[in-house]
Length: 173
Image 1 (tube, helix red, strand yellow):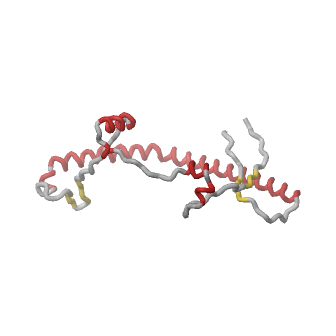
Image 2 (cartoon, helix red, strand yellow):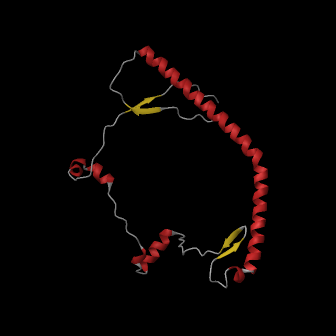
Image 3 (cartoon, rainbow, N blue to C red):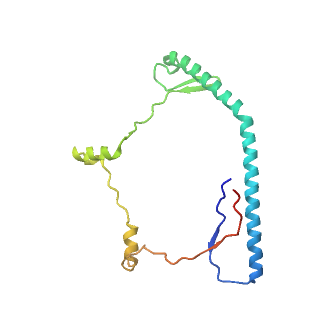
């Protein structure tokens, strides 16, 4: 089983009220709790796997039956479409137990090989089909932070220290 990272990150704390021995005990307890969390998560996943396996076959069978029934309903409705839609005046056919609907999806665009399409559009002079996106260059701001700070709305966060706790663990292979 792959070992997951067990680092705890948090902002540093200015108040220190514990002794070295208390911190060592707390780190050991933290590692114990992390391992217990991993054990419980594994047990939960094992139970989910059993439930999934138990329901997989009946769910698959029902999906097949539903698909067959939908095809049969659609075939009948297609052959009686004029009757159900009042000769195309409505898009819904009504039954005592439910309704069927014919809906037209809105137009959509599918692009394959976007780089080539962009080049073709440029070559053909169809620039109205090309979107130019304007955005702030954060890399340039970081290169000249003093100048950038003079702009209202820009603040630069730097030197943020984080505190990491890593309990020692054996990696079983």
